[in-house]
Image 1: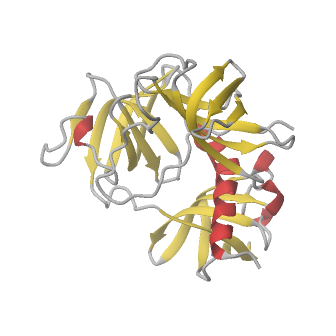
Image 2: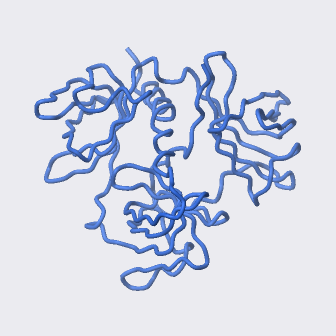
Length: 301
């Protein structure tokens, strides 16, 4: 019997391993094309002039804001990125570039324009493709029944799960959904087996003692050193911009690969003049769920 707290940790690992690659694909772009989206603000990074938005389909977007971005709101209270708060509903219009999504207009909308997203995670207990629905049981005994429509997107390793007919009792799942007409409508279903979850998660803070294109070594406060592999999927952010250098402070989140080596999923760094590493300044003016990592590490075989 797996304890509820441990099961939640296991499910978090599953989401990191499976959901995040697709979240990154939400911004696979064709430069020069225009885009529009609607969703809920999950974070604001003022230093980088970024707004993080989760759409009604559960996709995570990083929206770049410039001095040319126009802000619109019902009473004119939002005039810049500094006025944007986590939890606001927005409609974003802009242009896709090589660097991602560049906002030309950000409009604050009402709750009726963008249904509030909810999330659940647990083990699939029943599947009824003919309805079509499936049931999910959480680690604390809570259960949900989800309706699957054409809106639903399924995420799994190697794309093996394409629809409700591919689900099986006993699978682990994380679901993004909203309540419509007293039915829980699934928008994104992240699915995997027990063996799909990573065996270990790692988070380490300390000073950078070595850095290359393929690895980074961190020395913690106990003078213990750990070397993480860097891959094309590793997300790297340094406060103030520039390259990470020996002597910088850094926080590294990663996973163990099949060979038992730490692989960096996310690296947040600050110049050595700062007394400790810190995350980018995300506004948290109201309670929120933690946004998922923007880009994961593809674990080598």
